[in-house]
Length: 249
Ligand code: PGA
Image 1: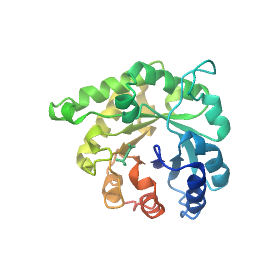
Image 2: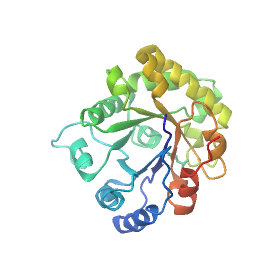
Image 3: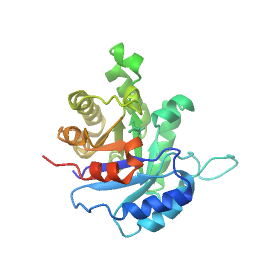
Image 4: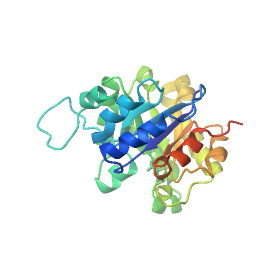
């Protein structure tokens, strides 16, 4: 399966800064054997999509509100995102779960509506440091996965991307070792196999949490790591282009 290298810009870059950066990204070397995605803030999705049109680099959103339209002040709908150029939507990022108290059920509504609007959800899962130390990683990840994918059909599952991001590794500089990540990714695939059968083998499972040029090659060498979701290191051309150009073993 084709790996996916995704950049999550979080709340960085104004539209004009995003335009400059997107123009730089056009210089990224093209690889036939991997997909590249950037997820700017809402206000920059339109301009980044226009600049990157025809480059093969996908554009996505970092969040969505799970309704067609309505009186939801401050929220953004799936059709707004799609029309602006988004083809992927990050759902349930740990910052949404922890800062904005999003529940697994609410996140599952997002996953569902993103699929209805023919975009690909990137469902983020991952345990906190406390849960990790208590040995709860697998049970936490399984619950987030099963609830987040509630009512998703086998056919829809083909468009879903999973991102395993241990909360203790996000923005901290501490990444999971490739072996730790591989163990969780293999578990995630097993959980998916129980419900979705063979489709599980083709679901892309990304790793996220302090991915940088120094650790990308060893992470991507693991069998069940099918790409990465990159925060901090996706904001600069040099580091992001190096990550996109990871060495395939
Ligand atoms: P980081 O963020 O790469 O800065 O750790 C990853 C993420 O939050 O998706």
